Length: 347
Ligand SMILES: NC(=O)c1ccc[n+]([C@@H]2O[C@H](COP(=O)([O-])OP(=O)(O)OC[C@H]3O[C@@H](n4cnc5c(N)ncnc54)[C@H](O)[C@@H]3O)[C@@H](O)[C@H]2O)c1
Ligand SMILES: O=P(O)(O)OC[C@H](O)CO
Image (cartoon, rainbow, N blue to C red; front, side, top):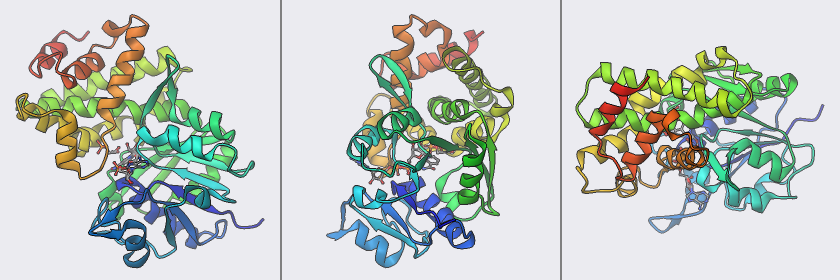
């Protein structure tokens, strides 16, 4: 069997960390070609192209400073060149850019290629809520698995132990992807419940915003635990109401409960939402995202907006009071303090 060509589409905070994992694994495992092209959205840093900096210094000084990635990861600003003849395409951009990337790739990827999405987000499409993996499947006409989990990028890049979940309904494909991602410090489990794995990854970002709100209000660990518990309840309910019935065990994998915990304590959504509450109406979420994240993109507030629009269309906002309240606080329709009432009255 010829070695498979892997490519990575995306080079942000998580994109770089996972490039380190992949770069090490393709060398350790004979199933994959050693050189891995990575699509980088080109920009200038102090007058120098980011792709050149990555290929020379093997570090993305803007999105994951202080971490060296393996030399076999090759940064390239040409998206079509990156995916040319690729057998495995790893999608890891903020979800905001998936539509335009898929549009560019339509009809341009190998017919036998497979994709794995590491993107935690959802998209409203023609009045319906789309999984990111569905956009890929529909536009590129190839299978798409997902990888989600409690994976703060900097910690993974530092080699600190964590777990992740691959959601893949095809067991053979799932095992191939496990070979690509599993490392001694990155333990991967494969489950055949791909929609639930992806939904957990997307929806936990809304709950992360809720955690930041209670931190900004000066509440303690008990209140945050309530946010996590009620958030998990709404995630389970959302999956089972709108998608094929979830396996309960999936929520106990890294993509479920564990990702909720890490996001609510260590994530960017939490951080920006806390700053938003502390700014007492002086700054918007978007302004704080720009101020605090240096180009990294929040997924929680836009996902909350998309879920809100979807639920409103179904007249079901009252069935998901936590998701609803978090969005209304983000857009200034409710005050952060109202969140506590929402928690108190949640059934
Ligand atoms: N950062 C983490 O700790 C982490 C962990 C697990 C999963 N994720 C998920 O991975 C996905 C990617 O997150 P990330 O942290 O790698 O990204 P990020 O938040 O660092 O986003 C910045 C990236 O977006 C790119 N970008 C900016 N404008 C663009 C455009 N117009 N077109 C294409 N790309 C553009 C930038 O070049 C940069 O690579 C998200 O869905 C996120 O939820 C993130
Ligand atoms: O920093 P956040 O809030 O985008 O969360 C990062 C990861 O998804 C945690 O697993």
